[in-house]
Image: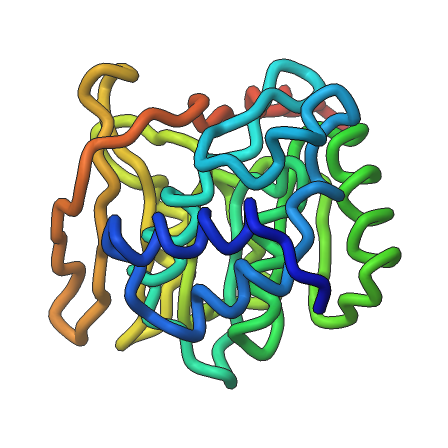
Length: 217
């Protein structure tokens, strides 16, 4: 791997800010973030900052990626559902740490660009779907881990919590507005969900598609 002083400085900053899991740091080091940002921001790819991508979306700040990934407590055999593919960067990081990533995106141009990046990097354990992430991916459930990279309301979507396996972990930003968002971790036990508020954050909103009208025969 070529020496990149900006990458090294970023990894040291992440470690100092609380990303202490060496496997997570190694995954971030291995994924070339410059391939996931627009050409105009190439010189900022290894800065610890969120950057704009197409259609009014963003690629998350590396510190947020690192902390949320770490909060999932991933194991190599886990099946992970990611809601909000975006640029594909978070999914690519997850792919280095688990068995398979199922990632959903509601904006087709973003998903197609992300798929092209996965192919260019020869990442073979990511499966994509175009659709409403709030409804999850029931055909592949239950999931050991669920990561949502857009902000829900006060509570997580029920379709997603229903698809979390017993013993599983979900990490999701929640809050009524952007000023009150927090990353929340849910653990599913036999008795139900256990909630743990982690840290403040700011994400684009988690959107759902309007229900389709029922057509009479």
